[in-house]
Length: 397
Image 1 (spheres, helix red, strand yellow):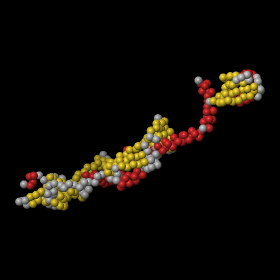
Image 2: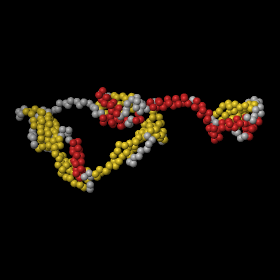
Image 3: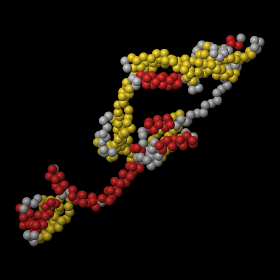
C-alpha cells in the first residue's frame, strides 16, 4: 500500500514500444535498474508497459541504442491530475468565487423593518440604527449582538416603552411598543387634603376646599390641611379638595467616604482582532498585531457564518482587548467633606418631588475614623405635603 501511494504521487506512464529486437530492449531496461511492470505483448513487434514518470530521461537514452520506437499512451498519478486541474482552473476558481460571494451576501444586512412605531419614532429609531452601523449593505459581523442593540435603543428612544429586536436571515426586525399618552384623570370624588409628613406650613394654593391650617403652623403626618366639606352649619356638602400646600420638611443623611481609594478604569485604548473558527481551530483574518497592554480585559463575540439561510460550522470571532489602569484617589479632609455633601444632596434629590427645593443644610457630625470620613447632615426642604384622603361619611354630620 505504501508503494502504491509513492507511485501515485510520483506519477506513472503507460508506454508502447515498437520495432525489431523488442525483447532485447526490454531486457536492457531491466538490467539498467529501471522499474517497469505490467509488460504485455501487442502483436509480434510491440509491447506495452508501465514505468515511473521520473525515469523518462533514462528511457530516452536507452532507446538510442535499439531499433525501436516508443509512444507515451497516457499518464496517471498526482502530477497529471495537477496538470489537468490547472487546465480546468477557471471553472474551479469561478465556482469558489460563486460560493464566496453567496456567503458574503448571506452575512450582510439587506433589510431593516420597523413595526408598531409612529413615523416620528421610526425616524428616530432609524437615525440611532445608522449610528450603530445597522444599515443596508453593512456586514452583520461588525454590529453588536441583539441584546446590546435592544438595550441601547430602549435607552436612546424615550418615546418607546419596549423595542424588540430579531434577526431573521439578512433582515433586522424591530417591534416597537410606544408609550401611551396619559389619559385624562377622572374627576376625583369628594376628598380632603392631609399632610404626608410632619412639616411647618410655608405656602398654600387652594383651588377647591376649605383651608384649616395657617402659614408657619406645625402639622403632623395625616393632619387635615384642606377640608373637602364646605358650607355652613345648616347646609354642608362635599367637594374634591384641590390645591398644593408647601411645607418645610426635614431629612437626615449619613455618608461614609474613604480618603484613599483604589479603583480600575478603562483608558479608552483598545485592540481588535478578527478570526474565522472551525471547531477549536482559529485562523486570524484581521488585526495581526498583538497589543502591548499590561492590564486589560478581553471581550469575545462569536457569530455563525451563514450560507443563504443555513448556519455553517464556521464562526466569525471578534475579540476586543481594552486597556485598563489602576487609579489611586486621595482626598484631603476638606475635599472629602465637599464630596460627601454633594453625594448626600444628590441622593436626597432622588427622594424628593421635582418641584421640591433644598433650603438649608447643617452638619450634625463630622469625624475621621481609620481613614474614612463619617458625616451626618441635616437638611431642610420645601415640598408639597398635601395628599388626598376620601371624605368619610361621618365628616358630613
